[in-house]
Length: 322
Image (tube, rainbow, N blue to C red; front, side):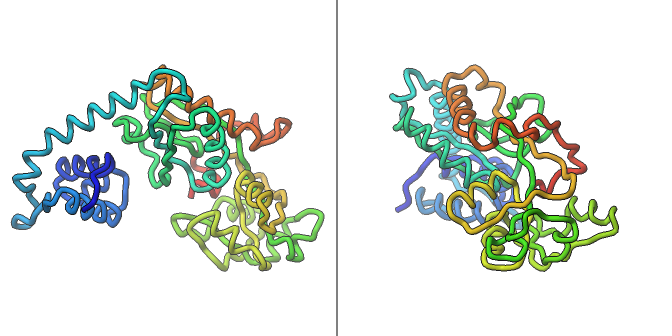
């Protein structure tokens, strides 16, 4: 029998509120498939179908109707407990939930984990993919922190810039371009490219800049993430545009990559952490935010002029927002 954890109770609450799996998926910011799987786990854990077909729609079972108030009380009390973390971080036993951009995760997560382990060994970190940037999960307490490219937040969401990233061309260390001292626009257009886009786009702002100069690149592969883009480049003659923080991390961890400054004026990509106003003065939230700031301090050199760059206009956002 499945154990009932807090995430399953949140699925139950969303299903009861929306009345459909699709509606619950939107409320939870999950895919319909992921929500359907969670509902299957919930049914096994509770020993009840929860929702059954009724005509063209669905209706809750008598058990689900009897349980909804109790489940919502549990979620409410849990939210209160999450905010009531007292004492020193070393004494805490709790979980922080952080939504993070996939381009940042490989470099940020290990650094934050090491810092947390040193200061609060009883704390667990749970990271979620940034499939959405909406503020609902911050509002309802199911998310403690949101880390990603600067967005225009809701009025009740606060933010702080962590560092500013920029894009570089990444090639295999063994490729002819990888042995060049620098890359020109001619070099950039002379090799096939990998486009990393979660929306499956082959074209981005770099193509607009090239087109304005009467040039174009050839995109032969489109992949769903930057990490896959980097792996595709290794051992090939392909090039891929990646955030420098991610590319530097992968190279420093032993991936045979060469990073090349772009001969194009792509906009900078400020990275921020976001949290809900209700936890602004909460000791646990403040500790988490300050720990993250310390953990990522070495990701961008202090003398990098890009650190002072202004936020890009969303209409000209870099490929990382595609």
